[in-house]
Structure formats: structure tokens, C-alpha cells
Length: 475
Image: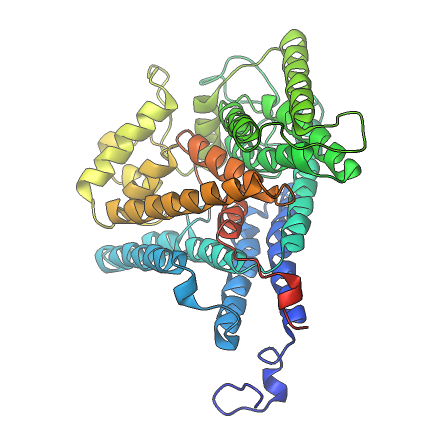
């Protein structure tokens, strides 16, 4: 009998009766859209001034589409909740996010601006309750990806998106009039005029987080992909991404990319005695390819140090972003020499102490500080430590569930990497481990953003996927 909903016609329920081969394509297509749509949105917002308010719209278009199709998969019984324990953790995160938002609704005293911010996010950030639900939707559908070949396609598109953003980052770094909000940082916090790159990520620090993800994927592909053309494109891209990371003047890409390389090195020298061997090309083993990556990265670093130097100015970037560009916080003090992360930690612990269970509300860090006279000066809208930020805005229980999700994901990824030792075709497994680990490390120095977080939740979700062999799937 054809499947229907509520006794409606079979024709109106064509999705429920699609062939599994078609379902596989829909899942892969939607996940690819999760990369392509934000990229196109970023290009549009960068090219057309005054359109940054659409940042959230591009996320909702993909995130909520993923939720709807995930429900279809459940109705079709292509997936079962009991087979994916991550579902319960995601559901808990969503419930806690809603509780945090609803606490704001109940305690705002009718302040519509506070309620709207908790729902839609702060002006220029747009990472409120709805954005969090969109992230979770992307994660769930990514966990349901059905074919290994789909993952490679997603990786190709993700690396392609990195190349596009890298080209934009280079153009932003050249001293001419290409659109950029970080061409001249205010003299109050930065005396030297520089041209910082932010790609299409809206902020040099956020761009560093994006580079962490795409470099981990590109480096793993360069090391283990048998297709020589793809491996070379990935390898050159990984070095190129590191180059543009140096143009951000942020410590984030250095930490993130460095961590990715360390993880890949550990995998290479523990998941097989001789690494992976290849028949064609000059670099005939994964270790030779990895050495070439390190040499290329070192050469780029030496060249940039010789020609322009590298200055790390994360505090200046953060204040330029939240105060001088978005005007959503109080001004910075010219005599406060504390690091960005110390200031962020101090502000976060104040909020955690005041609201330990549900936090101050999604994306309400800036408004909380502005509402207290003693905290206006040196206020920032992010902790620049994602873990403290979750606890401050959504509560300690939300942080505990998030850490549980990460821990469970790492258990799966380590298990999958052990399988990689005997099946070198599944190199996307070490790529995922490197990307998730590197992002989790750099998260101590960065913040989640709607321009980057969807890619992280996509990769984290794929780490939970259970691939059914194509021969076992009926067309």
C-alpha cells in the first residue's frame, strides 16, 4: 500500500513514495545546498551594502528545509531514531535553547527588542533561537547521509567554497577599494593601518574558524585521495587557505589549522605502518604528500613574514566588529590592556553566576552588559570562547549536553579512524576527525557565527552517518 498522511491522496504524498535512490539524491542535494546557499548569500551581502540582515534568512532556508526532510525520512522509516542516539542529545539542546528563549519572554517585562533578539539574534549576528534550531536541523540530516560518494561531493563543494572565500580574502587584503569592513581599524585600538581579510564570513576571526574546517578537509584529501587531480587541487587549496589565514591578523586560523595538521600527523603515523601508497604521480605515498603540505605551508609562512610580517590583533578585531561596525556594545577602554579572552571570560562568568540554569538568553550577551552601567565599557557581544558563551547565554545544562554530544562524536570518529587503517578508501573519516577536533580546539578562542557554524554542524552530523552499501539499497 502506498504511504499517505492523514488519509490524503497518494499523488499528494509523492515524497513518501519516492524510490530510495531518489531519496539519497535529495539528502545529498540538500546538504550541498547547506554549503552553496550561504556562499551565494555571502557573495550577495558583500556585494550589496546594507543587506546583512539577510544572513539569518539564508540559514533558515537551508536549516529548516533539512528539518522538514528529516521528518520525511522518519515517516518513510528510512531512518529510526533509536539507531541514532545523537538525536536525543540534539533534542535536549533544542529544548534547552527554547527554555532559554522562553525565560527571556517571561522575564523581559514586555521588552519586545529583548524578545526579538533572543529569537532572531543580535543585529549583525542573527544567531538567536531560530538559528540554533537551523543548526540542529543541518546536523540531523547530515547524520542521515546514505552514500560515501555523497560525502566526497559535499567535500568538493566545501573546498570550492573555501577557494571562493580565499579569493575574496586576497582581494580584501590588497590596498584598493574592494568591499571590506576591516580595511582601517580605529586608531583607539590599533595604531597601524592594515587590510584584514574576512572572506565572506563577516569577520576575520570567524573567517579563521571557517579556514580551520576547510583546511582540515583539504589536507586530508590531499594526503589520501587516489584521484591525482583532486588530491593536487586539495593540496594547493590547503596551502592557499593557510596563506589567507595569515591575512586575518587573528590567532584563530593558526591554532585551528595547526591542530588539524597535528591530528592528521597522528593518524598518519598510527593508522598504518607505511601509510597509503599510490601508483601515479610524483608523491607516491601519503607521507610524502603530507611532507609536501608542510613544506608548502612553511614556505608561505616564511614569505609572508619576510614581506609584511604577521601581527595578531584579535582584541582589535572584536571591538571593531561589535562596537565600531555593528554598534551593538559599549565602547572599549583605551587603558584596559587585558586580553580579549580574559575580558570575555570575566563577562561570561558574571552571567553564568547570575543565570546558571538557562543563561541570559540566546545571543543576549551584548544587551545584558549594556543593561548594567558598570559593564558598558569594554562590553563585547561574544565571549570568544564558545564553551563559556554557551553557558553564559543558554546555561550550564546546555553546555553539558553540548560537551556530551562532542564526546560521543569523538568516540565514533576514533572508532571510524581505526577502520580507516584497513580501508584507505574512507579517508573522509580522518578528514572529519581532523575538522571536528580542530574546530573544537579553536572554539576556545573564537565564537560561533551563522556564516561558519552551519559547516561545522554539517561535518559533525556526517560523523554520525551510517552508510549502507549501494548493493544493499533497492533502487
